[in-house]
Image (cartoon, rainbow, N blue to C red; front, side, top):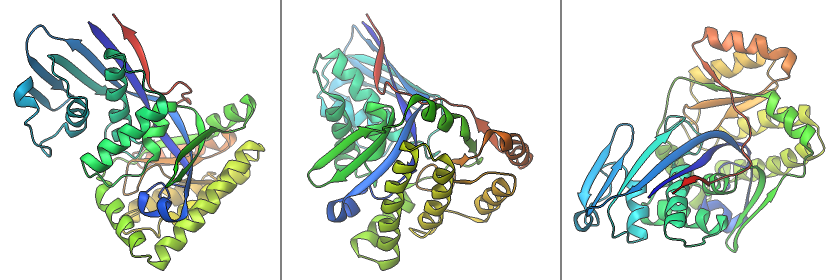
Length: 335
């Protein structure tokens, strides 16, 4: 038997940081995000022997089933290992993993990995897990079993796809599609530009710092998160009423607040690139993840995109073309 599954990564428009448990369990968090058509793929093949083999582009595990379950975390491929251990997989299989974007670029790839492998096991074992259950399980494995300092938005974007307004609280997660007509969604898609800044980053240090400051109720961090949450609500309203110029302005304001959450979110290079983009016609933007590198997302009207593209390409940046994804995690082949 061979199964193929894919799950999308995401771009976050507003509310990033309020999806960490240290914040939303006290105050409630909200995120506005969009899944995009850059995917993490998993191919699963059942084997005739008693071995589990996991292969990514640069790492590999090949163990007998009984030895696989004794493996310790921290040696690479922790997420697929943790998912298989969670489901207590006891039969031989090959897992081949590939991604259209590199890790550490702020597009939520770890969440997409976890959701995608859960989705393929869900299909293999006929577990009938819902998208909500897959997202929650992915978060639990990453946050509780692996101890990763993550928020909760990536797993929901990967599982559900689409443009969504997501609320986080102690009681659970509520995800609702944005009430925006197709014309507005198409305009939004066309007016957003993504550029790879040329550097990947480990978000753990930034997120641990933010998490620690939130737990200690540091005024500047908690105050900035309150403002970011308020701005996310305004971003939602701007998209739904079709006021995309206001959406772009709010992105800029939100980015200024995000930079206050922890050191390392920005640096002189990123500040320079953002300034160049705005000088050439971008209205607003932000880094797509925790910060420090990865992709820069810009809102720019089409008549100014050529100038922005030229200016940033002169700085060595590479543009990523994309479309919104509305399907989320999906098994695209099963036999």
